[in-house]
Length: 482
Image 1 (tube, rainbow, N blue to C red):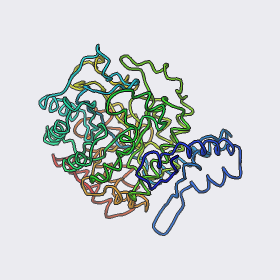
Image 2: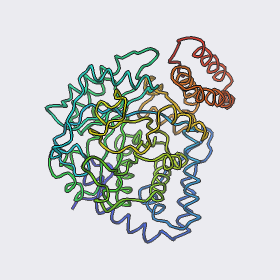
Image 3: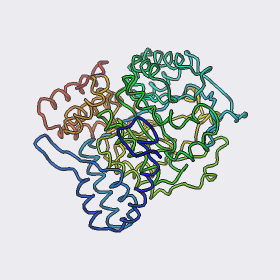
């Protein structure tokens, strides 16, 4: 029998079923243990040091106790601390991005995804490089600067060379004042050699959702295709880091398996990356299963309520305080608005989950991977965020200045990231307002920027940021960054 070892490179040892089951039993036993819960909450809170604000985070067992706790006042305290942590390390900034679907050809048999091989009535489509270019121009015309590219697993139709060609095409498109400055990649688990190629192509974060950490369920949910190999999939992040990619993004598809099991596995995976590589995940995503072409989410009996979903998000923020957290347009405006206060630091806007969807006048549904709940334009999402007191940020400076992996995390852990992220957010928001925003959004945005400039503590940084913002307004100069 495998023994739990967070430093192991074997999936069954760092995501250990016996350890997860013991953790869930421990959490259930202690979910009303007020003394222990208070002790965990004290540990989770941010605290001041000479170097700035810090957080100690929580172990998977401690976080699981909080997730199991159903004492109303303690749950409210979890939410308050989650918001406090989010503001301490990410401020009121929300990073904007969009997914770009390159191909829905796939050889896997995933039962929750309409791209599965046996689905014969969904049209199969793969973008040519000219079509990639057209999609990028459409995204640039909205104002996007950061993309997450998506493709099914198909070694014939979507080989690594195709993905690399697409990345090169995306970075090559300079349209008016538009540029895609960061390409994150969400493709199937692959080899160390291929991860090196992705790194050399200049990707940002490599994203791979585990879908479920429950091995028995995983094998049933992925009955055929290369994704059926649980160990190869689960160990992908270690290969990615060996290949030089130091920003990786985790996630599970909530609703496939019991959420408490998934939560414990997710935190254990983050602990494993920290233990082995000295840096945890750059991002954690929290998708829930949604309706799609031939997928009925009610067929999966582990769906979670909005209330549980909020609690999961807050507990992840307490457990892994420095990690960026992502929520997509799978979720409604109402749900996204609530979770923004509980730890979310990145949102997608105006997403289309179909291959070639951005160049179509009307939103196409025939090749969608899942239904989009929040169908507002990017301009509407940006204005909504500002009305809620957030700064929509199109910043990609850290990646392009080499502040990735442990360098990013060390800055974040010392609270120093705020010295550059806040002004960078304001400058990139100015670009959006000048180049793409409606008049109403522009008015709201410039008022917000003026207020937020005054919050920059360093007088010299504030003066430079103000001058850069004026230059953006009065000329075609772009891409200022600290």
